[in-house]
Amino acid sequence: MENFETIAIRTQTERTQFQEHSTPLYLTSSYVFEDSEDMRAGFAEEKERNIYSRFTNPNTSEFVEKITKMEGAEGGYAFATGMAAVFSTLAALLNSGDHIVSARSVFGSTHGLFTKYFPKWNISHSYFDVNKPETIESLIKPETKILFAESPTNPGVDILDLEYLGEIAKKHDLILVIDNCFATPYIQNPIKFGADLVIHSATKLIDGQGRVLGGVTVGKADLIREIYLFSRNTGPALSPFNAWVLSKSLETLAVRLEKHSENALKVAEYLENVPQAESVKYPFLKSHPQYEIAKKQMKLGGNVVAFQITGGLEAGRKFIDKLQLCSRSANLGDTRTIVTHPASTTHSKLSPEELEAVGISEGLVRISVGLEHVDDIIKDLEQALV
Image (cartoon, rainbow, N blue to C red):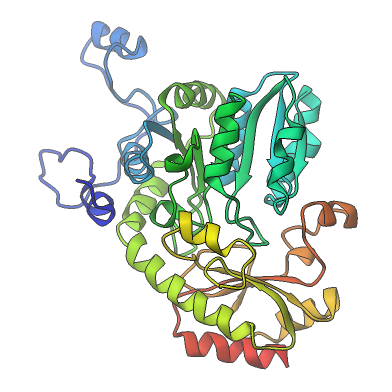
């Protein structure tokens, strides 16, 4: 199987004696052994088998196998949430004294890891401006181990040249970790451009209906081995039920992303002609500063549009309050269109200085464009902007 849609639908666990057509739920915490030798060999990892669902489970294994194939990776591990994936991936690979070089525009909780928690373990970081990637090499130190970035970024929808990042990582022997949440494996495959590890918050577009939490990291086998061992001991595993839901969701990811992207482009084009909306950003808008890079590495533009609302923080709140169809939520990647004002919600715990540092203005609005009829989405945005 080589085609994305076929991988998404036909990658399944082995059928049981009941010959089910759809993979069943394996709601079990543990597994039995035939005898003491089977038990010994299992724990010694001399045979591949399920031991305990904190380690592996048929449902989580199926989900991971799909993402691994979709991303062109060697292996992977699934987590309870996207942030569990980010933390566990970095914590498994970093030691006291190590240094991270990261794009300044990262998700608020990732920023919190870098600034509030990693320093407790003597792990430092340096940020580079997403609009000045030529400064990256000047930030690399002898103790730098990881180069980290999101593309597109959350919530500003900036694009980083993954091929350029891959070249830098290879030159300086760094581990390149890319958060691919906004793009999904259908739109973008960072490993093709030099990434060593790819992270997803499966809670977003991979689930696609706002139902369950989940995360996954895929990439090079030796790195995944370290992440697996760390996670096996620390316990951030994805639940079998959520894995089952997410694996089913992957079956429709391609068709959903096609429609999401079609709607999002129309919304972005509408906003470009609205005086209350400034600096509209969508990867496949020709006005996007990194449009050519986006076209090079992305199959579609995705479902997230960002813009600056004239009037700043207060205007952003009023706009949110006037919405009638679109949902007010901190999530994204849902079938339902979601509008978020990051400065007063997802990034509200950041100081004004920190907001500026991660490139978020008080008037920034993020729209996760859903699968409703695009005319209805635009109509709601139109009445709320007046």
